[in-house]
Image (cartoon, one colour):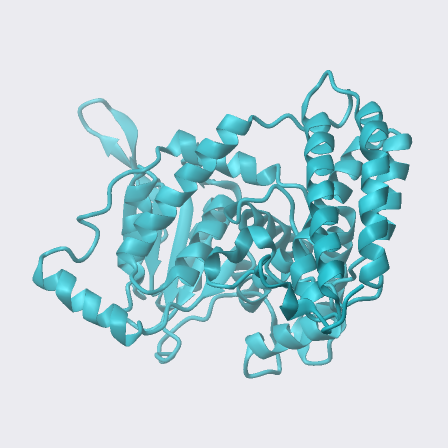
Length: 454
């Protein structure tokens, strides 16, 4: 059947176990910075490259080494200086007197993880040696194309303060980075842990062990590319991209290449959260690091510009009733891919119901009915989602079998929560409450009650 996605459940579970081990390795090496480690993983799995703009001594080299060790790859470091030559990065050919032939000596670019330290202190000619490598994962030397490892990942650093004698990266090279991050100083507790670890000889990357191999990393990167991006999310991305090109404060807006990168990093973010579809929240969460590396203009902080753009253009969120009709229409017309995407969108809205209900005047009985309807929808979703994944299944027949249950549950919810209720497009879904947020307590419906009975 056309358009069916057939992921393996066991493979998916194994993939997320691998991600968890990789995440733990980075968090162990870079203490107290889980958000930074998460964004590094997002760039890696999106097959992007990373620019770290920060002060010396904050763990940039440790982070790069730990990443290379954790993925079972090779690590190389280039200390960029004004006298660094392109061949010092890419390699060079040398004539062998014994064999009477030229032999190629690989440069540090032939590694899985390359740290280009203080990249803005070397000349534009040498900086350009990384252009082809970052964009195409190959280098051309003496008219010979030499492929790089498929997992090739560049972490470049630059000091934001020392501008004297520096060569700012050109727009073309900035656009080849997926994101720009700042590690920042650790908090007090993390620094105490650093001192304790150092006294025990446990500081650095000595404790980092391989949790993947390059082949497994490639498989994870391919899985990320399969993360579903719905039509509405794509439109949201394009609207935001076009807004950067017409904003009066932005001289250089987002390029099409940057837009593609944004989508890939959002896919990676969703995958890291255990979902196989991208929500507007994923787009917004990675907006600042993705846009911050490529937006140029008359502003002091790209973070403020990005925040303003997101506020001026919030993601449109349809009601559960609307999406239910769209799912039915998509299945009846045989558009299984669209139906699959819409199902994910509806699941996201159902996950947000506790947050929406908390801001709505509900009686205890109303809250119980919403919970019952949500469980009813979840059961129907499970059957319908399975029909999308099994090649011999008939989604139309499955939908016909659960349509009445879905319609009934949607009706119960829509009677109690108006269609124009403030459904947060940027809130965490219930599957993401492991970040310390409290879920509404089923045993405490009085929190949602106006004190009356129905």
